[in-house]
Image (cartoon, rainbow, N blue to C red):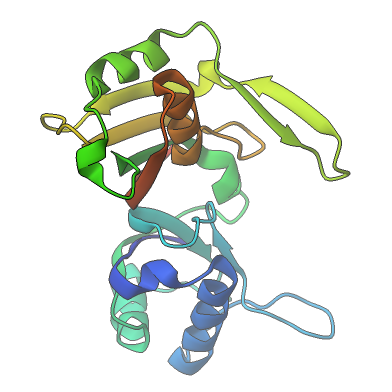
Length: 226
């Protein structure tokens, strides 16, 4: 089992998780590498990607595991696989991990995001500037951050996300109508975490105005070493 850190940038941000998996499968088949396949009527290469990205988000430090039928030098994998991948999918590093060890999804401890929030209006000149720093500080100081959604059967549910929030900070000096934020949030054993869209929602509630989001990037997924 080889664990690979990779980036997904540029036009590849518009590639869905399912299409990313298909692209990797095709590249591995063309590479001639001794990839291990699943059983059954439709065997597929054994690929695990740590955590799916939302469509349109770039990523600078993602993780995936590939399993092979024989020992493979880390550098050889990158040399053979990288030329078969499109621009925007870059293999950054590779290391061997025990096949019998915990799965990649069990190793994830936190996610780090950066993104822009901005005041929405047909004409920005009609929008009064807001105190972004104070609004962000209010979210961080909140005793609870309640998120409402539904389960798989459509039943309403809610949970307090505040324990997952590890850090939320402004990057640079906030502009009058726009701010760039960095979010660090714990990822639990079920893969749940605070997402940028939730921060957008809570700031919208606090500021009582319409807020948009762009330039979304997952800067990194943090893995445990034990």
